[in-house]
Length: 217
Ligand SMILES: C[S@@+](CC[C@H](N)C(=O)[O-])C[C@H]1O[C@@H](n2cnc3c(N)ncnc32)[C@H](O)[C@@H]1O
Image (cartoon, rainbow, N blue to C red; front, side, top):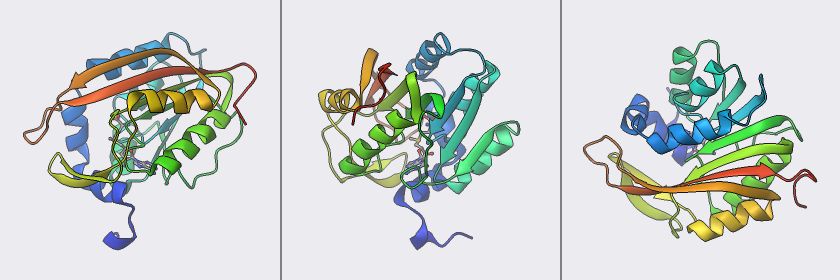
């Protein structure tokens, strides 16, 4: 039994949601289209980091099925257990990405689908810069978020109390550009999770490439 007080707020929320999260977001056509965008650009056998890998579906499962080597990292032990069970051939690590060392130029691509929202703005900015450094020059970052100008907003997500911090769309775009990434395409959609307590939410998918000269700073 995990001591509740020692888990990060994100782990508390996503330990409680587990597979409910996967079911609620399974119908996201924008997420699938975003993965297709990445698949069209990856060399065979690419090394991909999936930040906040959740249950492993759809991201790690789709990329692995196409022959890529995916490392999924998630702070929620329950999510990592589900992902490992659903994809025994996958590599999933239970860790807080804010504290996990990432090698320089270690990955051909990094995905971060809705994984930053329980971090402070400073942490999100610092993480995007670290993720850029973890990419090889010319590598890809796919970042999806809920583009709202909110800081420490106390809300309810699928029945769970959550504290959310995010950026307006133009500010998250400026942040990734400041890290040395070029935004090649972006998709804005409204999505309603399949859950009785869910409300429509704005989603922003940014498809980016690290400049050949490498990360900024
Ligand atoms: C909204 S869910 C998205 C899951 C998956 N990326 C998807 O789109 O289906 C966010 C995931 O990020 C994880 N997460 C949040 N903060 C994290 C952190 N600091 N380090 C690692 N994982 C984190 C949560 O545990 C959760 O599984």
